[in-house]
Length: 500
Image (cartoon, rainbow, N blue to C red; front, side, top):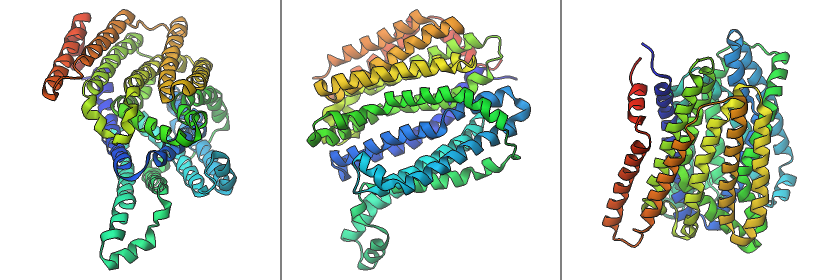
């Protein structure tokens, strides 16, 4: 008996989500460690800034080949081994060149980026990015083969190693040096150098990336080698516009942290980057949900393309997705007085950006849903164009607003960018690949959520018990409003979750 496609998508999203949620929760628990106990705002600004560069580099080194892999994997079922090995060879070759280049040129690159005293950061991050780019392809294969459990297990190991080493180097070793037995102190001194400081964040990540790639070796070797230059040529034609789109997308996601460093006064820039970066992490649940959804949805969308009801299915997925995002938005904002303890006290001055960034990330998720039209039709140049327009908006608004309102300018620029990209993708998509999205219903859901949020602001001065009781009540009110706006939703949900 077949399972409803959306039920299968939801199930896989939960599994991918478990690796993302548990993994990211554990990873994000490092943020309180960093911001409460270890790093000053300037030091955490270094971590935020370096990983902003990593975001750019990872997009460049994968150059759209993950999505190309899914498309060619589905469109050439008799050549799937060749599709995989061709994709892997391409990424392996370019990533190896990148690792060698960053290792040999670490000193001049560090000087350009303002870290001349720490060229080792460049070498470490170069290896991290190269290994993660290579790992992206066997991870994509697991997703294409509907093996979310194996995918999740490898992700869990990655996170466990990373967090374990962070705790070892940043907490245990300093404690042992200060208060441990004399014998242990000499052993710790042999492997731990307090002068490395922030560098241990990168070392921990590096070891985790090496372990992850080793675990994925069986996936990489589980096929006969069948490189095809013709197929690679066609894949690159398909994927290169996605590289442009990806670069433009990461400009929207990460450039604001970099621009903050250069557009704010030097004496406060890194501190402000640290505060903004920490508060950005408070949108954790929205980010995790969207990432988990993307892991499950991309192969799902391609696999359902031949279904005669595919477009109605895509519209239904969009509706459930928006509802889930709005619940996450309200869940965080109605309990922000509790959530704020996620970051250290010195970082909480930036909490005002959280609702803006939550909404921005929701629209990014909506845009991802909409983007299926140009991926399915092969018109990836439109994706590149939309992302470039978004990047231009991001750059101009950040340059304009950061000197005026600091990191709030970056947050508002992010929201404006993703809303603009969503609108462009919708109008162009309906022209080339019409999907019957329920626009009025989706808009009413958003209005209802914002209304509930603004009502909650009236309770800001209430005693804690009354305030949190009202927060739970308001979540219930929103659920009621959702069912009131779309009275067919409950029946649709029951049909979706039932076995056909």
